[in-house]
Amino acid sequence: MTHLLLYETWTFSPSGSATAGAFWIKLALGFLSVSFVAASLLAFRYTNAGLRAFYRAAAVWLGLLTFLFAGAVSSWIIFGVARLAGVDVNFHRTVELLFGAAALTGLFGVFNASWTRITRTTVRLANLPAAWRGRRAALISDLHLGPVRNGRFLRRMIAKILKEEPDAIFIAGDLYDGTAIDARRAAEPLNKLVAPHGVYFVAGNHEQFGDDRKYLHAIAAAGVRVLSNEKVEVDGLQIAGVPYRNAVQDGQFASALDAIRLDRGRASILLTHAPDHPEIAEAAGVSLQLSGHTHVGQFIPWS
Picture (cartoon, rainbow, N blue to C red):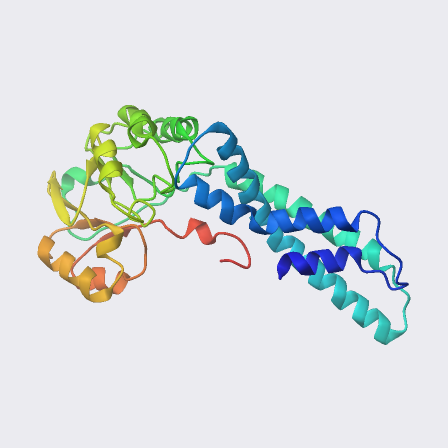
């Protein structure tokens, strides 16, 4: 329906005159309307350069579609208000301006998505072991290695992290996109990701679309400690991890945390992919929960 609205908006003429190339516009929008579904289905089975390029283009179009839809709706609103007010407005020129603004906004979105920022914050935890005071930890999440991002992107992120000289590193899931990929090869750059007090990973929803073992084995083979409903103790600090599948439902999440048996009298860090149930983590005695999943709110209006 969205693509049909774009077509009707672009080809509409108050005078009733035909739009040049209307057939080809209809054909192009028809193809674009199924492009991301087709690319996604293919990406779950195959991986090659051509498919990756197709997937990236379809993904960019899907994001751009939101802004074009807003432009189309705004065009009709302006046209309707102008008609009621008795003002003569060039409808097609209005559409051109708004679609142009939508395209620029979409291109900025692509740039913004590739611009990685580092956020620094100070965390104070009760009963934190003296050995951990003043130490630095890094949190990274949702790299989504697959058709859009690859090993080159991961290596850039690792270089940024290591430049911060963290004492511990936490990866909060969705390292992979869940599409077809050589999981072991994609995880190889993680061999360079080292910290004095460990590197820890917990599975996200994209690793757990199906059997997550190939991803977890690849990550572990690269030297990263995979946490699955368990805790480790490092210099008196409890570090626990609950994968996405065990943290979705309230009861299951509470049971997983209960089984881990955190010592409420000592500081603890919980690594879990989605920040959905912080009240359950707090009730279990967790001092600090580290999560990802939200993509910093994605983009308006899908935030």
